[in-house]
Length: 200
Image 1: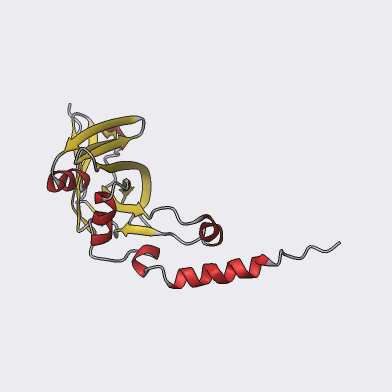
Image 2: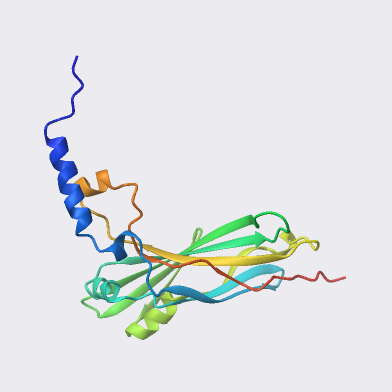
């Protein structure tokens, strides 16, 4: 019994290859000016909390899409790491924060939804700059109880941000599922060493 591929298969591969050549490199692997700065990890009320700021996260295409009512998801990845002397630093735990922005073209209003696990909080903005400041920052995000820190080790937090591109057409997505299409992809940025002094 023959197991030959359908005749249209090579045609689809050819079309997908052509489309890849015309997709901006910034979409395939964003390596622009965007970065994370002012990463701060501290212990407040027995909790490890992290703050960080996204810089240059809104390029022209992203702004255009938002203004046209296309929702955007900004992901912030937070990693608590333990320093190791003679080996790679060890990842202790991680947390992901998702911030979704959606512009209502009728009400002329931005809706920003902040997701942390099962918790969600919404904010409304009438102006672009207010929305941008809200989306471009994670502020005092709780990642773990301070008791996870062991006194004999040193710790720090690494943060990065990503935003996936809009979904590709089905026939392109099928062939290119292994390519990370990102509109935003910052390098990792580290906090200063995190210290915790237990009382008593």
